[in-house]
Image (tube, rainbow, N blue to C red):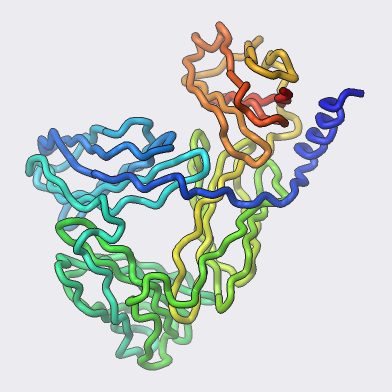
Length: 419
């Protein structure tokens, strides 16, 4: 029996029993944050957003939303371009947008928010400096008047700040609680807390040039009196280390177990998971004291990414790099309607279809065993019927999954690259 047949049997067992070995995180150092954010063609009802190309970026994720005293507005989308036109703005309204790169190794952090007024003409703002230029991170976070049901939050004024964005949320074993708001003051009174509950808050500055990073979380217990915690002066949160060793195992069509290495001094871990390209929208944030967590509600063959940060008594670490993975296909999913040859393949893979009626755009991807997309292309169904070719001469030897997905259908088959 040839080697590739032996490996094929192993891969089939691996896929359909959903028993995968641990996968270590890939380095994302080569996925830089986009710079040079700016706006042009600012008519009032529409605007063109732009940014500099980031080396190694496959696409960009853009988020735009309303600011103070402006009707609600929020859009998130992906693009392969370095510019995007936004419509439906309110003339004179305050808006902000940010961008992050998505590379084959993962995602970058977001660029700092870029602020603009609809109809105010072309302008520039913070975007090349991850600290937001002269927009300082607030420090001196503290609490007072801690009655149990209410509390006063406070922080030191940051030079150049126009306003502050405050976020407060529940901690471990506490009823759900979450508020985000803007204020021009350096104090804020919060009500509706549960006496004895665990809470945390953080603050960032918003300046004319952009936003600062958030101060580290400040932890407190409702009703425990006035206290101090991480003061925000150290953005790495002292000895609160960034988790590493991210990976996944026990991957099925609709769930996966995420894991990472434990860090010294950590009380809790915060995990954020979201959908990636060509996958139904999904976003969840968890906290746990363990270094593993099971996530369910995923879709078969979906692309996802997650990241983790530590929460310590002195504050939070920064997030780890994103870890990308793909869920397994359903066992009963047909894969015989994709004709891919030769298989094994050394140089060029020919792909044709039979009796498949895709609707809308069709996204084609080659995915390696770690869940990384190594090749992708989008087709109209009419073009797809004529067949296409995938160059694989630069692929590493091994098994890959060829996936074709549209609004109404997902089809997959296994390809063995052998040089």
